[in-house]
Amino acid sequence: MQETKSSFFKVKKKYLAFIKKQENFGEKFYDKIGQLKAFYLPICDLIYKTYLSKDKTIIIGLSGAQGTGKTTVSMILKTILDNKFKLHTVCFSIDDFYKIRKDRMAMSQKKHKLFLTRGVPGTHDTHLMKQTLKKLLSKKFKPFYLPKFDKSIDDRLGKKSWKKIVKKPQIVIFEGWCISAKPQNSIQLLNPVNKLEKKNDKNLIWRKEVNNQLKKNYKSVFKLIDKKIYLKVPNFKYVFKWRLLQEKKLKLKSRGKKIMTKDQIKEFIMYYERITRQMLNDFRKNFDVVLKIDSNHKFTDMKLY
Image (tube, rainbow, N blue to C red; front, side, top):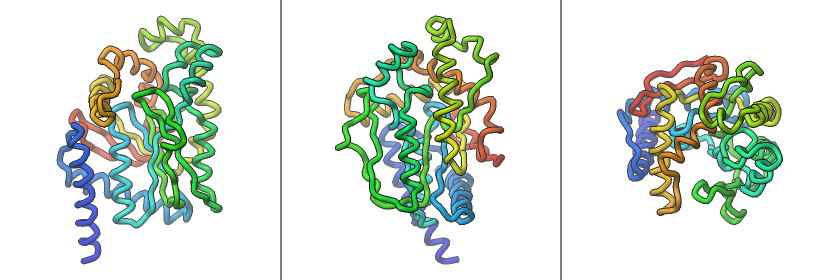
């Protein structure tokens, strides 16, 4: 009992220290200890039990719309898993697997001009993604480097800036806005969901190719995930509001590098809208754990499916 209390206080201390750092970048947190006890600890307990039942490196897919706090949640889970459960945990984002700008430019010329903008399925290097996950799962693990994408320059950084993974992890938290997204049927693709599709994708070339990418390349990556967690926004309007906050945070972290304006963010979100709305509709079918987020960015409910 004493050991349990001791481990909780240690985790609580590290958890609050991490949150304090995030607050310095403008994030707001409510009911910190309540959130730790009601949501973060139970999720980590579920991950721990999954690890024990499979006795191998476990991949956790963490998904949610833009601005839901996936990276923050990942790091909090890592803090608890590392310190309370003594499970070596590695976190990384699907964002770091965006194709280099040169490749997206070539794709925009060959397939459709909208592929120049990063985000949708088709703009990630799925081969590198799959290769990375398989290296982490390998029983003959060897140290390697994780890629790093810099959103402020819209390009992947050179290999000197990549993160070295020295030790085989027991838990991998793989986060991203479209992780575990499913393709739509041909009828669902017919009507444009916003001005961007209506104006720039009249022949459905772009959205059909995005859909095809989900059917093939991304499906093979998502198959490697053991547990899928979804952060559910109250509704789509919060995506813009929270993405704007995310951009302000990026400005603080990138020390004045170029970031997007409000109008640019509005247009940028349109690229993500179709899949985001689809995921909001189908979350019960596609995820093992769903965490509902309220307007204050606080967890209010957790359901297992």
